Image 1 (tube, rainbow, N blue to C red):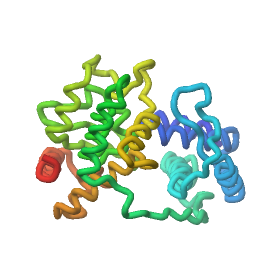
Image 2 (tube, rainbow, N blue to C red):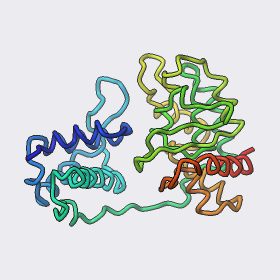
Image 3 (cartoon, rainbow, N blue to C red):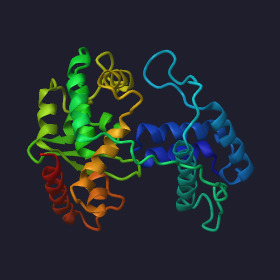
Image 4 (cartoon, rainbow, N blue to C red):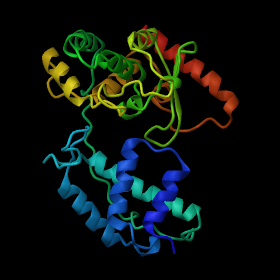
Length: 295
């Protein structure tokens, strides 16, 4: 029988994963690595979740304290994503016939953690303008925060996906950004407004395979949190995070009368089109929507 670690390694090799997904997979490998896949029980999963909750948030970035506990609790949505990742691993095991199709995963009985939604947690267009003005002043060293803010607000793409973008993912002529893997594990083509293109063209160009939003010290993605937090504080938006820009994008689209289905397509489709020949028309539709709202 296959070990959990072997299963996880096969799943990682089978597809591209965002950095958040890889972190969750590593957590489960640390918990269950040497165990046979069919030996993992609901009780063991419950105990692992309890340890995850007790651990809380970990520090990010590239410093020496990376991976150390912050003392802050995990949100309900984060806990649910960890469990969803584990469920995905068991689903993959059934697909590979490592487990029989009749196997009931030990995540089946998990009761989802509450995910409170605050409908007011989003940036308004006029607030983004104020934030941008401040960002151009406070970001004296990295000098990429304005571009990150505009892309976040105009595309609704999650911060992890934006920071994974490479220059070769940007089509300046077609005005699109190719997102290899979204949070739901699917690729996405994000339409770019003229403002997005303008901000990107201000940045120093590098090798096509280089990360656009890399650190100025290493080749890894830049830890944006400190400089964004500073800009938010200076602009009077204390405590706001990058995710407010994504919510702001959705709110701006909805306020302009864009349908829910179109909003889902612009911000990241949940389903792939049945055939690649429909992809071009879908992208054109999305581009017309964002141009109408943000131009």
